[in-house]
Length: 192
Image (cartoon, rainbow, N blue to C red; front, side, top):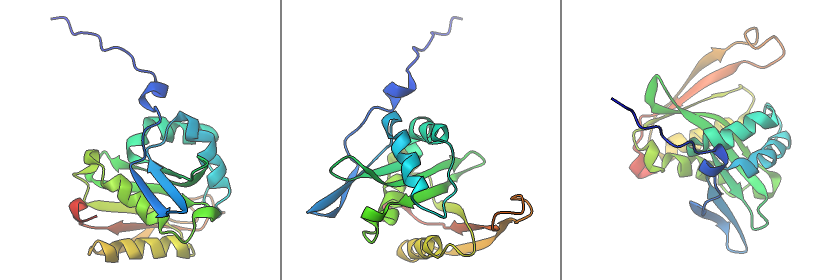
């Protein structure tokens, strides 16, 4: 039996710019949330660099996220197309009901707008994530902004929040604070 060969679709074609999934912010300064694409890679990299204490990965890693993991990532741009927010993550292979959030970044121009929450909820509202009912991430003990975001999400979604140490300082090479695994859920995505 001959299996038909599927035509190859380049990553750049898969990651074509699309219309925004959501428009948030104020009418005088709207922000547009959408899936990332290859043209966003460098802007994401620059945003992460401007958001300490986030760990900065290579520009190549952000290009991969923007193309290979675009269905589980989101960018927010302003009217000048500047990237002012980014969330990266993936659905866990061994737990397909769980979305693992890797990084969330909100640039200085968009802080105080609730953008981090809106980015997370935009991703979880996508049809391809309809079976997700848990959200996980890791947070260092002193990252008050991330703890605040996850507590607000758990409250908003009426879901329990649990945490435990996940990676110790020693496991992270002795120069990085420990990372706690934080889990919210179960929650219903149709209520997000």
